Image (cartoon, rainbow, N blue to C red; front, side):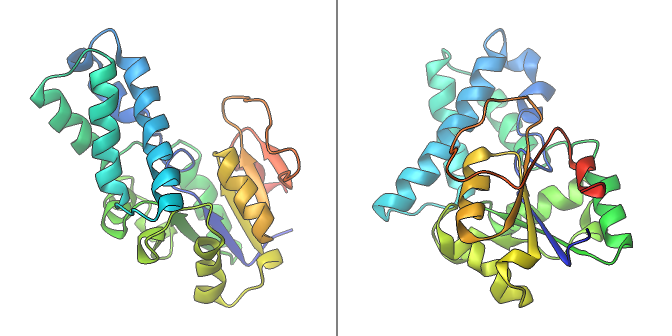
Length: 219
């Protein structure tokens, strides 16, 4: 079944969030993997806690804050490494399945769009650097609402933009918490579980669990 609209999370779903550190492993040193994991964990934590407390800072700022925390926990990094990591985060590597799946969905007549906590400018940089600009409609950013996913209002942006009902929309994310939020909102949801992680949020199951985006072409 082809849905009229496919909505994609950006970071971790289309773009590899760990590719920034991977590019500069030599500068980061032996703590590279730990730093990358902490950076991502704190970035998400800051988004959720600031949404709950009503103390908004945009995603680009939280990305910088999270890197500084992760670096401190890992013994520090040089100013050069910090600058290069933040530059790399603006041009993350796309997953290999992203472009061919987006192209195939568009060829079937579906619309494709990003819905992300990232800023509009940050998403535009990422999309263009990854070569995906011709395969996606302009991104929808939670920054417009000054609150992050999983707030229902963020998912509502998609319905408001396109005029589809939630059940007409297929939502894809590698982040299980994001899939849970989208399922609660009413989207058809696909959890892209690239790492084979155990399930959680069992009361809010995805419609489909897949190891890659390619499963969208068979579902």
